[in-house]
Image 1 (cartoon, helix red, strand yellow):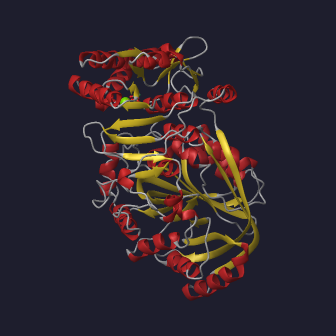
Image 2 (cartoon, rainbow, N blue to C red):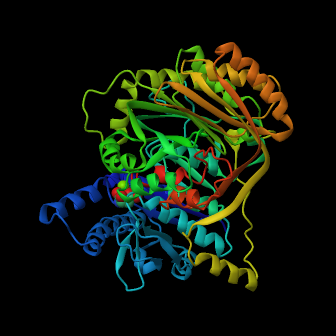
Length: 609
Ligand code: ASP
Ligand code: MG
């Protein structure tokens, strides 16, 4: 029998009426022939209220007692939900995290799930009850109550679904929230934005890291690791939401499926750094130490023994970052320049791995609107461009907290909005992405095998459950047949990058990694990699076009470059991955370090958690 795990967030159980409506949904799913597990968050803003209560008592409450306190919120919800289900004539049994056997590590307020027992759950389901499980909480080996970090109920829901799946059942997970699904971009900023019918885990992860925060990255990583199909949908309507599933071949035919704008960032450029191993590591280790997440990172190729690195931080962290870096910069004899207000526009899509000219299209759309690019980085399925904002928000107390607030800021970020609209149009994102032979609105993920696994498979399933949330590097991908083209001293004006990539793309050359960084003297350094066989052609085209822009720019080819991608699950939600990766990366490989999927982590880890 298929199992449906339905997760209701705090806003979806905020009133008795909403609790009854959620209960009815669970009963409906059961009546359709499914076994149903409901995972609930604390009612409304209960968790915030509990945090505030503790703060009134003590400035520094012990973590163990905070977890004890916060876990009460979800205990109220599960009881109310079970009462509601009974009132509507069906059977329900509620479970706290500890009762169910959601075992975590001992980090009381940011616990990671180690394993989940499914015996009690099975017993309840097989007895015809709806199992109601408290989100956000677990128990450690000392029998202490733990919590998973703010917003952790999504993670509970996906983890429970994964555990059920590993026990051999066909499972899907529905995330009920206050939006209709995942949109091509924030519809409050770009009115033409549309709901996406199906998106891959990787695309969803990139969207989440770009600021399209419908779900916690951590829970999407979990879903990917255990291949649990998810649907994000509105709690108050019957409209079908967005499926989040494993990558399907038809997704690769369309290069871009979404775009996003992140405002309120600041850029720091470190110039004249000694070009030797360990320097970047020292810089990023220092920032990690004071908990300043770094987002985009672009390291220049460097010449004459000197290198420069540009990166972005949240504007609210700028002072902390510069204070931390000041002594290091002085010691290294380097310089630091800051650009206060920048916005980041990104596009994401699984198809860009296979389609040429994606970057060119994006840059051309920006150039056509007179928008200058201050920094470019690329990931496996993402391109991000940093642009300068001219309109500073009136107040200066941003903390990157509520989405409503950041939405207001996004509205003020005039140039960012213009850029986002231009990019959304250029890729025709207002048109549904249709797949080969798939009618997206009628999409159902292929059911996982409903067969109970053999004993041996069961054993591996149990082994997999152990350390459920551990980081999993699924692949280190090295393309050693790449070459790099670098343009030094490209004048920093709108349209130049676009002209260069147009020249390269019209030669049919597939550009892989792109890094662009502006030095403090207003010159851009632009590097990109191409297949080695295409180097002579790419070099010739780049030289010609660069000369036509400004005869004083230099173009250099480097035939022997390798691009290293570290792919995996858990990288976003574990801190310090970029740091570790940089320190372990032989310096002879790609001296241009782009923020690939691996290092996305540092950016995410500090935000909203
Ligand atoms: N109630 C918890 C919180 O507000 C968990 C959740 O809502 O997912 O953070
Ligand atoms: Mg909540």
